[in-house]
Length: 154
Figure (cartoon, rainbow, N blue to C red):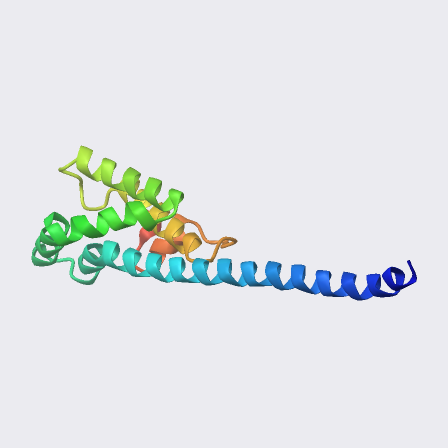
C-alpha cells in the first residue's frame, strides 16, 4: 500500500501531462485547419469579387461588358460553386440575396440603392468571415471607399 501512495502523485503528474499534451495538440490541429480554411476562403472571395472590382475600376460600358462576360463564364461558375462549399453561411446568404436581386431586376438603374446595400452586406460578411467578426463597420462604410458620394444613393 505504501508504494501505491508514493507513486500516485507521479502517476497523476504523468497522466495530467499526457491529457494536456493531447488537448493542446488537438487545439493546434484545429487552429491549423481553421487557418487553412480562412486562406482558401480568401482566395475564393477574391475570385468571386473580380468582376465587381472590374466594374468599380472601369465604369465605362466596356468595363461593365467585361465584368458581365466574366460572370457568365464557366470558370466563374466554378468559383461560385467553390464559394458554396467553402464560404461561411452568412457570406453565401448575402451573395445569394445580392444575385437574386440583380437577376430579378435585369434593367437596374446604375445607382440602385438596394443593390448597393446588398453588395455592401456581401462585402461586410466576407470581412467578418475572414476574421473581423467584431467589426464596427456597416455596409455603407464598406462601400464608401469605392463609391463616390454613396450617401446620396443610400
